[in-house]
Length: 433
Ligand SMILES: [Zn+2]
Image (cartoon, rainbow, N blue to C red; front, top):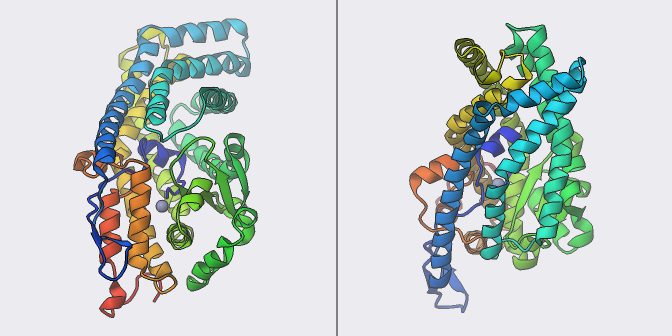
């Protein structure tokens, strides 16, 4: 249940898998053979595996946090960036041709140096059974990613340095202004042009004809219509075993996507809870909120980068072969600044994301209440399955949660699902007055 937010927020939630706390005490109801969920808990074997996975993911997170700035620093210190700049300048006097040499070389170098960690991350997913993607398919995705990144990086690099040279004092303002339509373009275009390159999507109506009328009941409760043409099922079972659903796109591309694993393994009431949660993101305009925060965050980043970059580069004049800010060779330095600022902003981004996820949980709980029998148990069972499938660790460290988690830990979500019952005490509902 991940809301697709703009790139900056996704950067901030690097390891956004909804793994969390389970202490699920399963008791037997006296009147029924169905276990009553009172808490999140994993069976002993899974608990041990989830703890081992949690530790490995933390190591991966720390390694990723350290390695990205390290790679960029090496490019500067070893004068690799300066050498690429020399090659670019030797190739042509025209700036665009220079960018055509410099940007792809730099992107490929960074991505190749980052490969060992990506490979480790994928092998971890495979060894814990969370991924079933073949290595051939994984490499295919990696190559496609590079083919997509390189032209985008080329245009961005060329455009950014054009602004830098044209306006050495106000580049931060024009750079920020230019980033706004670009961000909107990416959020709008991602579900239409980028996602289908990596995964297969089909209309939910065609794949789940029985589910649609049920989903429409949830929508009617919210006084909302999401056209059937905006609901899709993604074939995730080729690559992963976990569940997910999300809201993505803006304007004409806005849509709800449910992974096929989700609808295969969950009951219809549980799927409705997930859908109610996604409907919450949709109605509460979380994508626009994310975009607004992203734009504000970028302004802070551009202002800070401008203040820091000029000062640092002026002091270290000519060091590492970088002639100044408007020199192509300064790019790893600017990326390093961006990386460090992103890291510093990560707890804020994660906290905002967790808040929106909590709002969507409240919406989902209210949306299915009365539509399915014992909605609290349905939601709790759904959280239990979600956590168990992702091997979510029951007791993540609060600092790690604060820094990294895009969703509240599963145990917390499950507990909330069981406790949130305003209808029992005559309290008003938050989203369905
Ligand atoms: Zn969500």
